Structure formats: C-alpha cells, structure tokens
Amino acid sequence: MKRILTLALASALALPALAHAEKGSPLWLRHQQISPDGSQIAFCYKGDIYTVPTAGGQALRLTSNAAYDGTPIWSPDSRSLAFSSDREGSKDVYIVKADGSGLRRLTYSSEKEVPVAFLDGSTLLFQSYVMPDVKDGMYPWDWFVQTYSLDLSKTIARPKLYGAYPMLMPSLRSGEILYTDVKGYEDIWRKHAISPVTRDIWLRSKDGKHTKLTTFGGEDRNAVWDSKGGFYYLSEREGSFNVYHRDAATAAAAD
Image (cartoon, rainbow, N blue to C red; front, side):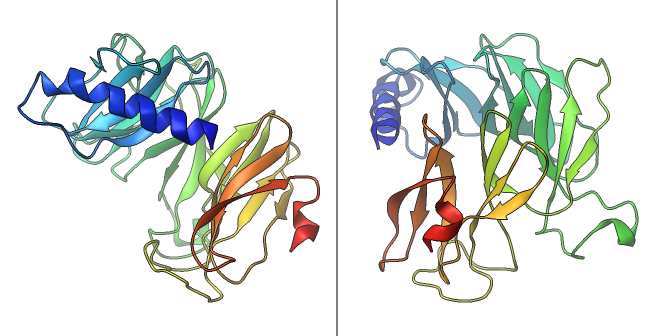
C-alpha cells in the first residue's frame, strides 16, 4: 500500500509541471511505473512518455511525435525505459535513456508488440501474437499473446519464444516471475464474475516450472512481489476487489 500511495502522491505532484503546457489540470495520466531505485515515475500522457521525480517537481518529456507512445517499463538500473510506439504503423518496442536520448527500435514485426518486463539488464520480455504457422499457437486467437525475449546486448536482437501462453502483468524477483493467466475471454471490468475463465496468479520459477498459486473461482490478478518473498495481489474473494498478501512458498496451499 505504501508503494501505491507513493505513486498516487508523485503523480499528483507532476500535475503542475504539465499544466504549463495547457490550461487546467491534465487528466488521464496512464501507465505509471516507479523506477527500481525509487527516484522516478514514468507515465504516459496524451500519447507521450514522461518521467517525474517521486519527490515531485518538473516532469521531463521523453518522447514527442504524432504517434502513440505508451506502456513504459524501467530497466533494472533505472537508466533506460522500454516502451511501445506505433510511429511506424503497428506497435513496436523501443528503448530510450532516462534523459530522453539514445532512442532505439527493438522490434520490426507487423504484429503489435508491447514490453512487459526486464529479466535482467540485457534481456527484455515483450508480448505479441506472432504465429508463422498455425501449429505455433496454442489458441487461434490474437487475445492469447505469447511472450518473447530480446537480447539487448546485440545490435540486431532476434526475438526468442519465452512462453507460448499469456503471462499478463508479470512481476520479477530474483529470476522468478509472478503473472496472471488467461484461460479465455473475460472482461476485466466485469464485477463479481465467477466462471471457469476468471484469472489466477501463477509463479514461473528459475527452472521454468509453472505453479498455480490461487484457485478462487473469481478474479485473482495483478500480483506484485514484496521485498521478503511474499506478494500483494487483487482479489474479489470477499465480494469486491481488495488488496491481499500471501507468502509465495505457501500460497498454493492457502486456497
């Protein structure tokens, strides 16, 4: 909760800086991401990427073009951000330094690619629906995105398949990944849903093993690691969405 409150406060402090560009208070600051070192918050406003100090102050605009730039993801050292942009047509993944310099395009597919997390300082995960052959997809529908990795140390990075199934909203810690699954179509805004396709939290261990951590018949999603091996997540198990906490080592038996 402290992390959430910090994000809300810093986003609010960014408003005066943006207000210089237009009259009134700006709305719809989206895709907020706190940097790993806790010093900056990246966010999207009107299709461009900005950063602002968590202590408040002047917001720095990192991108400026007619395209839509969004979904910023911080690198582990807080010096760069990956983001998606449709400046070349379909959404591709780009990376830029935290001061706005060194823009580099990373993906070139005609499909939509969106960055989701850094595995380490040189490996980026992104999601897309790239199916060269019908046999390559588990489900014949572009809502079931696949996860790919990119080696950023190479001048031309060729994507490698990391997961052939959706791994939504991943949270990484020491090589382990918490993620939300997708079993079928379920509107994220539907309240009090109980069905076989509502979402659950899974853990991908360092050796590639996948363990289901929640089994509630409704929605469990948006898991985020804490600093001690537990995690916070959203659940409707008591009626409405609230924040819950579990220990990852015992979560599978808790339901």
